[in-house]
Image (cartoon, rainbow, N blue to C red; front, side):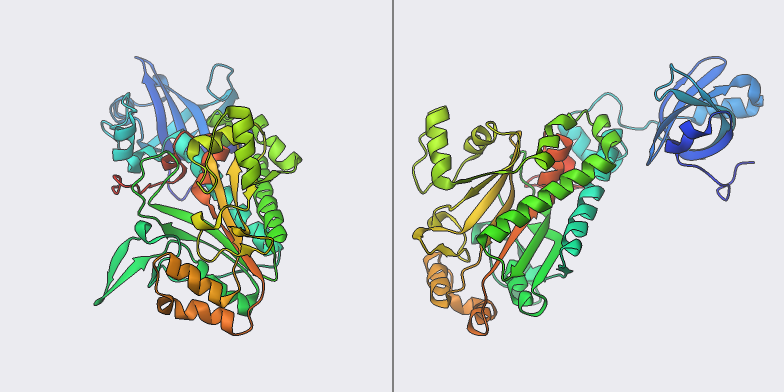
Length: 437
């Protein structure tokens, strides 16, 4: 009798076991039953395989159980012999000699209705789909690759508070929380605290959730997202651009190495990703970008305005690699970005834009080290410098040139997987209207 204590193989190993008896376990992905046969496709985290059950191989009682309870998403243990079968979904099948239904699944709710709202309502079940399984495996590789890159470059992984007393990226996008008898906020970024830690560890990174209360329903925005951030002492603006490019190249390389089958399941054209690791990224200034938009697309963007989604999409349509757009106007960027010594109207900051209309992956800057300029920028943005005492202290005691960036993990997953909506780049998305399940 099949038992949970038996030795099971992963389904991806089935093609290597032709002519052998194997045991697998998983969930019924699809099923079709006739009078004398049952065809069930079983899935586990590694893949799918067709299993064929012949009525003559089972007792009448067992056959009735199979017909009644071998439903979509029922969990099963299966034993049988592996054969080649060209008509099977993967070219192989298991001729079943024994099956045990572990958990029944009567009337699994996901059938033909795959509308956006319905899929989001049953997200806890939809993550079992092959699409979401593949996305989550790519996502896992992305997290591993980020850590792999930074650790190989001598960075220390560290953390900062999720509950913070001040804003960093704009007060209008803060989530307010009650902290005992005080008003606090969910972190928009780790940056202010990270800038304190570099004076101990010099090169640091983290991957942690960040929160933005943006009233946005676009395909690029989440209220809660995972943020890969780095901060490094002694690194200047050029160093920072090189590091951002190296990180993205490394992540793309690892996904192409480890997730080819998952990208195939998602229907992703990997030829569109290969130039990213083979060619240098395009670099241009904000002024260059405005000129290109005018010359190529007849878009008149007033100097001092941020680039909108449509303008970013037009820019990236000209290239098959990411674009690094530098030297944005100071007035549209955060208070901590360093003024360009050659032009105080712009900052030493950049956005890294992904191809295929995927928008900003990375926001970055060299940090302002001038204490008085920081105070003035805070005042200009309606903030009280006294509320940033710990941060300003970092400029008083042994300040050094330093730089950092933040990368939205869901944004890079969306791009790599070729997804239409960023909600599909995370298991349980949080948006302005979606907070359950």
